[in-house]
Length: 138
Image (tube, rainbow, N blue to C red; front, side, top):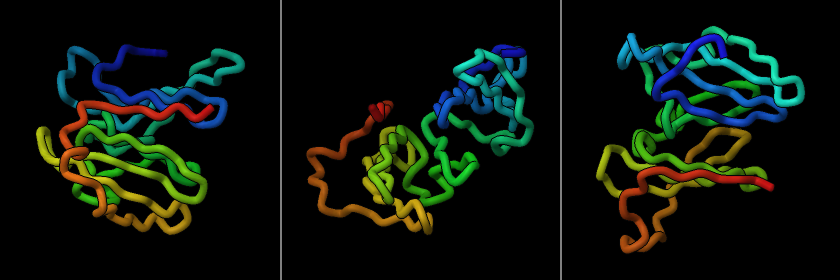
């Protein structure tokens, strides 16, 4: 990478590892719109400008659409903190909260249309705050 990044978000897209946004330590809290991408086969890094909305924290809310990055919060305002997503064929399962300490919401997002469908059948005993989550597709 060309420079350090605090509070960035890492995501693998195909054969690339993306480090999205973040900020240099001396620019505390000033999130950048750029990303740095490492091609996994060669280990080469490339900087991509305007990959993310500048000033928006990418942590736990980066989604991958058709050749673009997006924020899950743009899909539904209930998905801002502690976001975890997992692709399920033509759908993506997404969980997250509207705010720190808020109840967790569960959603199915149609990958073709981007329509976000709330899953209401989850018992409250399983919807406490999730600090973080991840999905590994093998």
